[in-house]
Length: 319
Image (cartoon, rainbow, N blue to C red; front, side, top):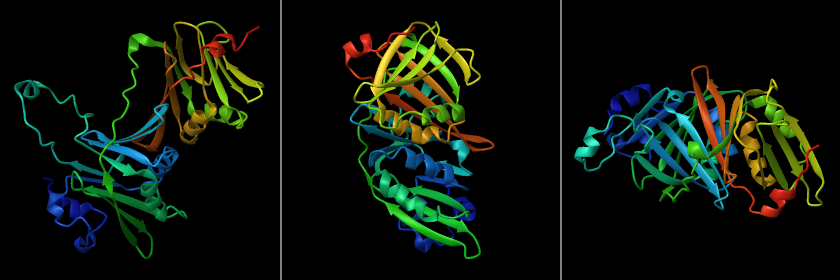
């Protein structure tokens, strides 16, 4: 159990009677964000499906969403983002092998649950209007209990509201294989410049083709509409937009443009993007977003390629 006295002293809410999760001593998870604007922006950006899986660990909070097993997004809100972060210990039987392990499993979830992400972000949106400074506190008692969200707007009236969001059983999440020996290309890109370039693409496109190669043009991004019309841009490995570029072999893969439109909702806040592809065409994008001077939020996407082999083999000829 958590020591709840400091939580009351430092927390957003001092009135116990407002807590729908009674018996404050049973709280297993408590976290405070002094300013939750970027957290809200990220949660809203990845809410392309209603159901999300939330994983709580000693290292922070993960929110995972999947659509048709074709695209997955995971938002990592690290412990450093929170002004206060407390989580109870996992209740499990200990083995001799586990006792010998070091604290390398901070990323391993201590608990997980399903959550309607649209309902959650709708709750957060109540204090997002205007330029007020608003904080958020999350509380959870454990398996089967709702997630309690307490919002405080620091203004003349010191408005406080509390939401209780029902949790569900966590769904199984695909574990995308991105082993290092299978990686063909790794590119680190300046976020805002890359987002500006992608924003100029035709939003009515149906497919995206990504060409990566150790040889020029190195990085080519092409879009195609339903009639087969193409628009594209090229980036050389010496471009100022690229922080680093590494490619071991030439690959060409196509993806649904609809999936890229989902990713772009997060790229709008990106300071840096890490892009990877493997031999099967799986695309990984890790987006770093500045949350404050001392903390970052990370959002990782996995996008499955289209399975049209003929299109991948014959799609483009380079001069």
